[in-house]
Length: 188
Image (cartoon, rainbow, N blue to C red; front, side, top):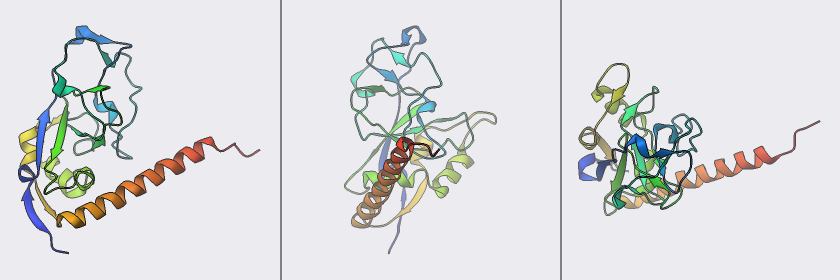
């Protein structure tokens, strides 16, 4: 399989989220603000954030910051080692607001398969490049421009689609098996 070298800027757009005023944080509401707690950096993917009470946002927000199902997000701040480079897919449209610590990744799907992109970004080679370019010492940060400046090697689009779909199918099977295991009665 032939791999072609790209800068991510040739394959994706990366947009920082909105700065959300704390006076509008609430314990309930229609729109939930995304935080770093929504990333399962160890297992990968999106998780419900149960670490904060004031996750909802009741203030005004521009429509472009309200995300859709399947949107790919990545953190711009690393409060826990290994978080930079993590990805998550938004599980439901119209429920989540992209906050400033979270970047929206939009692949050019004529060159870069969405699923393949989702799995490539948290790969070791991408995470190493992000770590090398991250700023600060205690809590490291990156920017949309730094993400777009990373180098990747990818196969042709048809191969990307096949690989991306296979990985999504495996993740779905793992999630189903976990759900089955959670619902099994405990042995006496």
